[in-house]
Image (cartoon, rainbow, N blue to C red; front, side, top):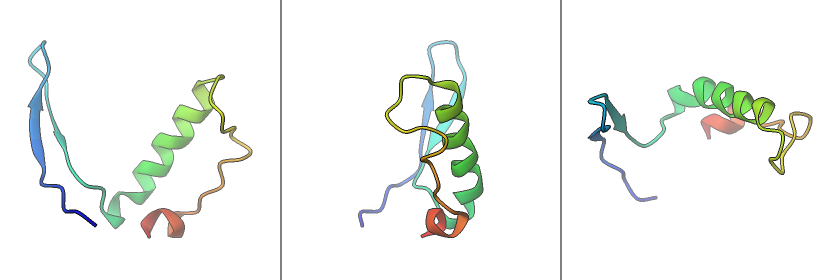
Length: 60
């Protein structure tokens, strides 16, 4: 897998944020984010009932 170096970006309104590769310790936050997106977006192909990735799978 290719290594992604963290990179700092700035939005037009002056806010800054980093883009980096996900690490195993990010798994819980990634799962929560994905679940929030799926529950709030009615036109996605995946439904809440179909999204069943476990914490351990996400860590991998």
